[in-house]
Amino acid sequence: MPDETPIDDALLAYAAGHEDGAVRRPDPQRAGDPGTGPDYRVGVVDGSLIAFQTELVDQVRRLLGDPTRDSR
Image (cartoon, rainbow, N blue to C red; front, side, top):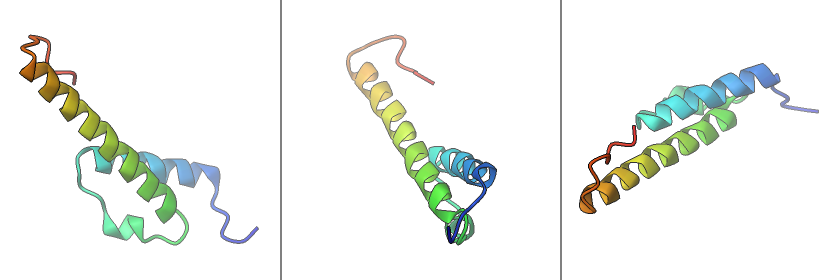
């Protein structure tokens, strides 16, 4: 199959993207890599969604007066 990336490289790229997405700092160079860029970009999106979800839950808890509002 063309453009096959070893699974370890794909998983490492995804994990790096997840971390970068969680702190909202994607790396354009890694995202553009022809071999692992797609895996990295999916990780960025997943990390960004987790960060958004965490912030949303914290804000809802704050608005409801929940003393345990920090879910991190």
